[in-house]
Image 1 (tube, rainbow, N blue to C red):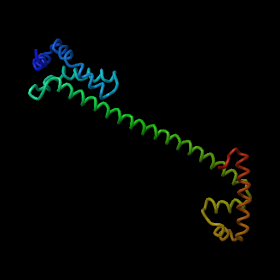
Image 2 (image 1 turned 180 degrees about the vertical axis):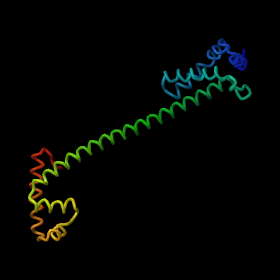
Image 3 (image 1 turned 90 degrees about the horizontal axis):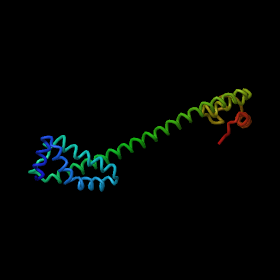
Image 4 (image 1 turned 45 degrees about the vertical axis):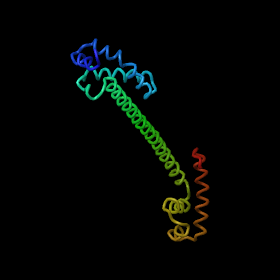
Length: 183
């Protein structure tokens, strides 16, 4: 029986015809899948899928367009390439998701650290004398220059610089005592 007759018999639900088609062409189908996928187990899966497609849709084979072997190998090639593309896309998605998850967890850690640090700084600032605290707040949190801080407080620039320096030393000591190290 030739391949065209085999496919007609497969269309009639002949398991013997499918077994004969498998016997004739599975080596070539499996070999192509193994060459493309470079994995024995995946090649076996693709081989099974190709022959399952033949069983489910034998009418898709047209003997006028080519041999059964060519038909099966074309399906093998297409299915193998689809699998590679799908796996590549899946890995890309997983890598992206992993990077985002790491980034999010680092962002959460950074946020928690920033909140804890802000609380320590707030407590340390409250321990300063009023003149030091106000000068540091204006300079570091208000974004003002020494001269602008001096103008805002109505004090000499040298006094403001001295208060900021002494206040920063006290802040460092307070933060160190609280277990917060500076970079």
